[in-house]
Picture: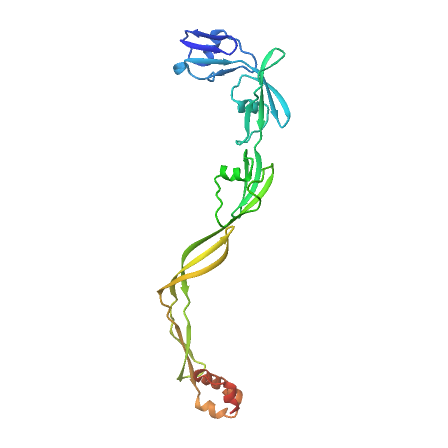
Length: 288
C-alpha cells in the first residue's frame, strides 16, 4: 500500500505491485503537466517507499537585482528553482520567499523568490591575497565570520566598523616573532707558515683542516611573511673547526743569490716573505 499525496488533488492510497515510483504514478492514472515534479525520483524502487508526492507546477517569480524571471515548476527547493532560470548562485548567496508570496496570476497559484547576493570582498592577509563572498555587513562581521582574529602586531588598513560594499578591498598587515634554531658551518681558517729549510716558491699543505659546526638560535621577525629582522640569541659550538695549514719555503739558493746579489727586484719576494714572518715593513727593509 502506497500513499500518493497530490499537492492539488489531495491524498489517496493505492495497492500496487509496481516496482518503481514512476510505475506507481502511471498505474494510478495521474496525469502530469509540464513542470510537475514527483518525489522521490520516478526511478526509485518502491521497496522502502511509503509516500509518493506529486508536486504540481506553480508560477515562481525569481527576483535577482531587480530583474524578474518567471518559471513554472513543482520543485520545492528554492535554489533548485533559481537554477532553472539560469541564474548562477554562489554558496554564500541566499534565496528567500517573499512574505507576501502567495500570489495569483491568471488564476494560477504562485510565489516570489528573492535572491540576496553575497558581497564580493578582496583583502590581503599576511601577504596573501584572498577573495571571498559574504553576507556580513561590516569588516568586523566578516572577520568574525571567517574566524580571523587580529593580534597585537596586526594592522588593519580600514576601520573595522566600515560597511562592506561589493568589490571592497582592504589589507591586514601581520607582524609575527618566532624563535628558530639552525645549524651553521664554522668556516675553517687558513694558516700560512714559512720554512727556511724549503726553497722559496715551494708550497705544500701540511693539514687540510675541517669546517666546524654550531647550533644558533635566532629571534626572527616577519611582516606579511617577509623577514625584516634576525637577532642571534645564543650559539653553541657542536664541532670545533680545525685550520688548514700551508707551508711555504723561504730558503734562498746560495748560487742564485751570488749571481743576483745586486738585483733588488730579485730579492723582493724573499724580503717580503721575511717581512711577513717577522711583522716588518718590506719596503723599509729594501731601503736598508
